[in-house]
Length: 119
Ligand SMILES: [Zn+2]
Image 1 (tube, rainbow, N blue to C red):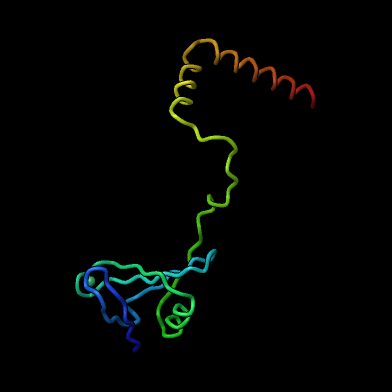
Image 2 (image 1 turned 45 degrees about the horizontal axis):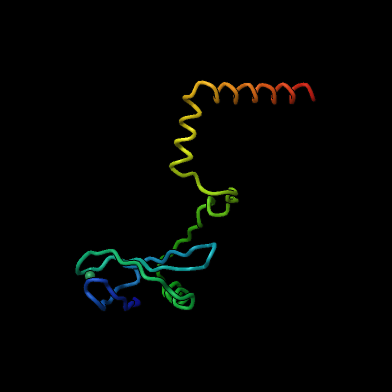
């Protein structure tokens, strides 16, 4: 069976068997990482791999799996600045001043009335 030389963050250089490591490959970036638990100190290590090393390890029988980046990363970002503490205070004031909320509801009713009459 293939022996894999790796480096533990605590113990330094160690030798592992192919069934003691696992490769995770990102389908979106083709980046790959090697994950293993050190047989001496039991610390889990994750090391970035070059594509040619991934190919060699997979050909040697190392198990692998793929994953994808979260879909939220590809969502369009809203325009404008992020909401800050002052925006929250202004929103709270608008909800509790007894006037702004009623005006907003009246405007919404007017818009919905316009929308329903145009159908
Ligand atoms: Zn170790």
